[in-house]
Length: 65
Image 1 (cartoon, rainbow, N blue to C red):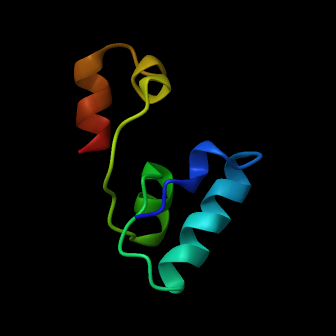
Image 2 (cartoon, rainbow, N blue to C red):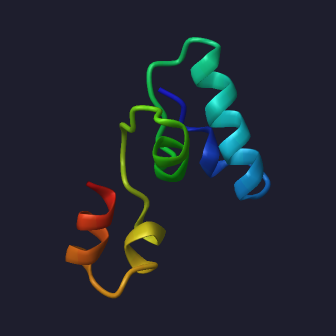
């Protein structure tokens, strides 16, 4: 599983890294946007910043699922 998005410099770098690692053989990514955009299976933890970007926890969980 790729967890690299938390360490990349910018969203674009995280998306490119997630896609590249999936093509290289990684099974999944923790990057939700990369999962939605490129059809990569999403796994791992949900960052607290993702939840805080939504109006409430339920909205965040619905958007994630």
